[in-house]
Image (cartoon, rainbow, N blue to C red; front, top):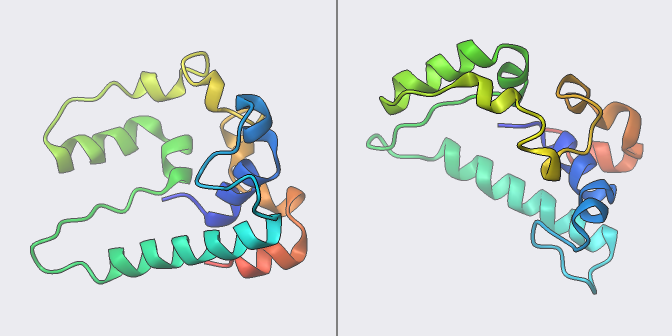
Length: 128
């Protein structure tokens, strides 16, 4: 799970859309930034509500984005154990492979980027 404020900072401060050349993550061309933010907040709220309401037969693993960035081998080991598969943690550190998706100068720069990049009103709306 990634901090919704960091997702918003990456997605809607135009870096990601400019890099790809089109609106993504469900934003309509006619939608204003404020309209999209309101809908984005609702989507995040619904996703978190669904995760918290999962029934006894539903297994869930909370894997924080920060943990994946700071300790990819440990995060991969947790995911391997949960899914009963083998993973290569070096894949997620290969910036070249994901260059089309990266908007920060480095992986650790994407953690907490909202603090420097988001207007205060938007950060408040996205408080987890």
